[in-house]
Image: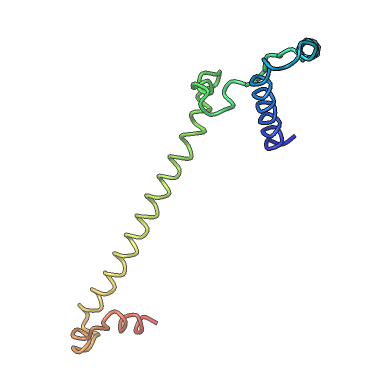
Length: 138
């Protein structure tokens, strides 16, 4: 049963209870007795409230109070968390160093070309100096 049907049933029950409470004083005695007998019968047939059971394994769910790290061989769990972090940091440092080396190499090529005087003087004044160097390198 979906939630909207359950909500409609509960709403209907509240409306019936409210109507009965308002007019209970005006009902004839036999009707009141029949309603009381019907209520007793319904209460006898009602299911007993069963306690809800929830089974949770420690260390499986987030927020389990750190039980994951309190288990035997917890250093493996810590290593499983720390290793990817260290590896990721090393990867980023390596990428940064590689980009820096490439930049230094490009600047060294430009400096070497300027110092060997292989460029015409107009290249130094041209705004497309880097484009000229790129074409010459090809």
